[in-house]
Amino acid sequence: MRKLMVMGKLAFAGLFALLLVACGGSEKAEDTAQAEQKAKTIHWKMVTTWPKNYPGLGTGAQALADNIKLMSNGRLDIKVYAAGELVPALEVFDAVSRGTAQMGHGASYYWKGKVPAAQFFTTVPFGLTAQEFNSWVAYGGGQELWDELYAPFNLIPMAAGNPGVQMGGWFNKEINSLADFQGLKMRMPGLGGEVLKKVGAMPVNLPGGEVFTALQTGTIDATEWVGPYNDLAFGLYKAAKYYYFPGWHEPGSAVEALFNKEAFEALPADLQAIVRTAVKQANLDMINEFTARNNAALQTLINEHNVVLKAYPADLLLALKKASYETIEEVAAQDPQSQKVYESFKTFLHSVSAWHDVSERAFINARAAE
Image (cartoon, rainbow, N blue to C red; front, side, top):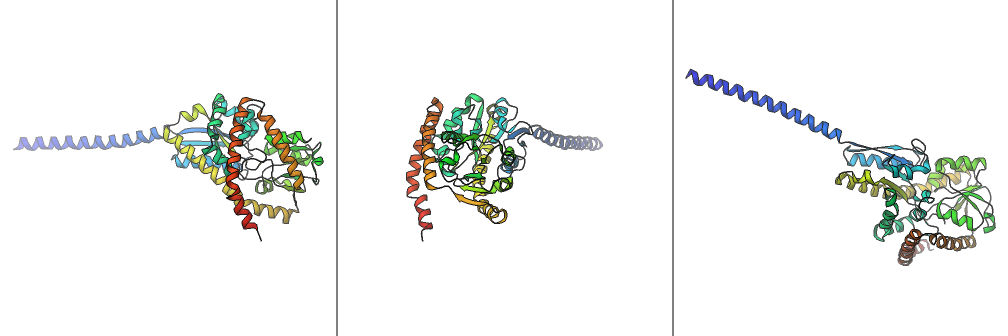
């Protein structure tokens, strides 16, 4: 009996020891799993063309990074760099292409010197609105062409926002005819700038952070930027008096998220899906924000800062439209890629315009009728 009791005590002691080891092992396994999870956190850099914390655009880039981190439970942590903090504003394309940063946030028409067809993926004078552009990219073949265009540069592009129809620009003199554009130095990038050349003006391509100083010092005579929400934040009313509409040159300007292809494809499949979903959300959120805030900002400009709001004369807009179509055809004919993208863009524009004649345009006209 005594022998059995001794054996029982030894067995219990052994079982207790095993339980201690198991508990300790469990704690160690949990610690190891947490350490591995922490080690798996991926750190990216995002470089942008926008000033730090700039409303709508700069804040949109930061919100996108924050959302990706939240949706990934911290597994993808993206540090956002404003224009000039890591690379100059107009070097975002190159920085992401070579892997200096894994991600960029800007507008494709800034890279037209490297990829002429890229400017079709920001905006086209008298072209697609924000919603129409999104539809072309998602369901009209635009994304496939965009991907093809950027593939040689080790880049993946996505639409990450759109402020909608922009304003026509800031001037220190009234614009009454096409002759008033003669010799005018105006900040206007992309295809709109090419149109200005055709009508005798001198387009200047400047990043946002340099626009106010250039206008105030007379380096340029006029500028367009975005619309009331952004233009108020930039204080452009301090440097020019007349504010013209509509933004014939930018009916819907897509903001572009750029990804280094190797970095993006190295992500696990679920993180790739999270990034794509977060970019789509950002694309929708920006047009919502600008639509909600533009009119209040416009009223502030008029009522508090004595800005003179003026419409471009109808005959002037017709002249600019004619010059725009001629310019776009000429630009598209300069290289096969541009021609290919333009043909797709033009086909979709004609199709969606026909639909909007009996939907959006018809309804808005009916709503405005008295």
